[in-house]
Image (cartoon, rainbow, N blue to C red; front, side, top):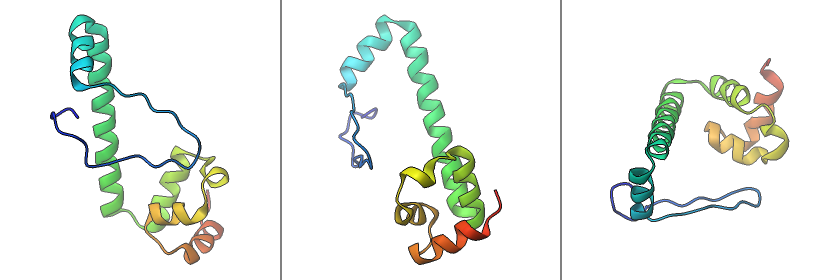
Length: 107
């Protein structure tokens, strides 16, 4: 979007969700006409990029146990709302080993 190309990605949600969308031109006009919105967009993009970099480090450097602890620190309620097979995939382990991890990790 920000590079004037259609996204190669899409969102899939586990619960009912609503997304808003705007064209690049609409966002650009809004940001230029309202400097506060431009600053808000910039801060949002920086936050999103920082999150992507943190996740990349997590994937490359953390053990399964560390990834699990980090996930629970960010979203302590996640075990109640997301099926464990998806959480296992997010952490990068087999779903059959996820319950062992849940039972072995002290939080």
